[in-house]
Length: 289
Ligand SMILES: Nc1cnc(-c2cc(N)nc3[nH]ccc23)cn1
Image (cartoon, rainbow, N blue to C red; front, side, top):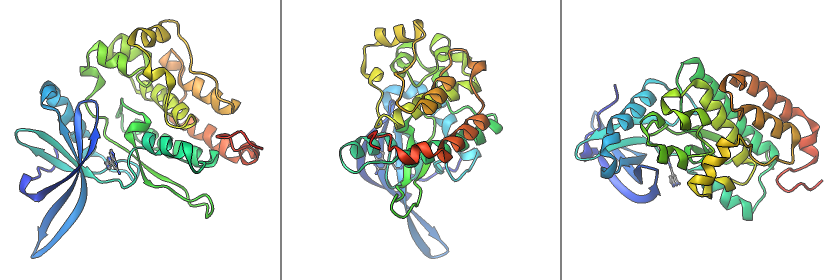
């Protein structure tokens, strides 16, 4: 249930890196519409041939994406099937949020308000998916794309787009799941088929922590055994300076899925945080008053 795209309509551009099982390229899609020809910037996601056994799950993720449309979801133009499976997505100019945050860490400061606006847009999008009984299963700053960076001097907010979930964690090996700690929820590492709606809430908490920590989670670079131990000992990520935010993150990252808040409750909490004068006084990324 997705648009089949003919390979000859695609012009391949530069490589933009890779995902867990994919290679990513810039591209241009050329369409002819009653004598008018027009070109669209696209993102080409190619499933690695070594992971061809994940092909069905890759196409399933694309199919889910083509079923729903939302302003904060990356648009899928379609699929090119041939020797390779290629997802043709809308090209989101400023790219992945983790790379953007790491770049900003050195230079211009990103305000707490900017980070909360991104968090709110993500929560709205996940709430939308929840209402459609769709589990994303792969929420992290790597899968959040920045389409507008916003400008704190004019108060114009950033604008994000959540990317496709890619290969589902339900078909992954224990090693691949362990590698995704702390974004993948504990219940999914124990038994991948136990992916529940609440698993997205855990990943949302880890992603929120990542956003407020400059786009990285130190735990994520540890050895697999250390990651597994983190879950076995039911540990939490280090507490952030902003107590109310740290509390929200820990509520989302509850080891018991059914004790995690709904995305409606999360949106309410984020709105309260945004209005609290505390964050206006203290720019949390630097802690300066
Ligand atoms: N749907 C998407 C997904 N990723 C991009 C993107 C843009 C960019 N400037 N650098 C990148 N580096 C890696 C990916 C990427 C664009 N659109």
